[in-house]
Length: 204
Ligand SMILES: Cc1cc2nc3c(=O)[nH]c(=O)nc-3n(C[C@H](O)[C@H](O)[C@H](O)COP(=O)(O)O)c2cc1C
Image (cartoon, rainbow, N blue to C red; front, side, top):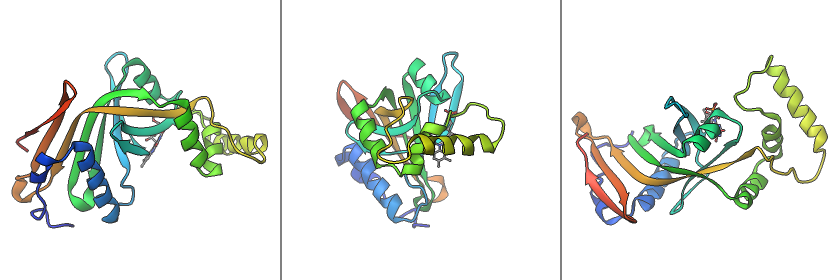
């Protein structure tokens, strides 16, 4: 593990939070994290019941944090009903956490098409085959559905299913947490207000 006393959040005061996030993601990738882009995604349904699950970050820039999923899934239904989400990254090798929250909006069809086209063919067929989070009689149901999709798309490009796309979480809060010895962790919260980011130190 990296020496937790060696790195300080102090330079954040001169760095936009999305640039800081990009730097930390690069550090996590270099540190040997198995899934550095894995993030927990929290949503709420119409009655206020929260749910959390892991998804993979596919893009992060000034526009927000993008992931892809099945549009019939509970998470997509939640986001259509209540278009706000929270994300959490934990990079164990670095003892760092990043929390994000903001508005969730669907990505444009052209953007989803472009990303889908980069996926391995078997993943593309899997997207067609899966009725994500709906019950099936057994694992064989999934294998059968994948085999049927392979027959339906024997060659050539596989189009993006109309029920598969992405969401972009447009952040208004980004918090960086850095583990330090004896629980003297560093936390800096960035908040977007009236179009400008401001930062605040928080007790750990
Ligand atoms: C490391 C990891 C990454 C995952 N990435 C995704 C993803 O990018 N998109 C997705 O739909 N599900 C992903 N999943 C599966 C989800 O955690 C979840 O089981 C599934 O999307 C159904 O969620 P829902 O029923 O809450 O909609 C991932 C799971 C793990 C463990």
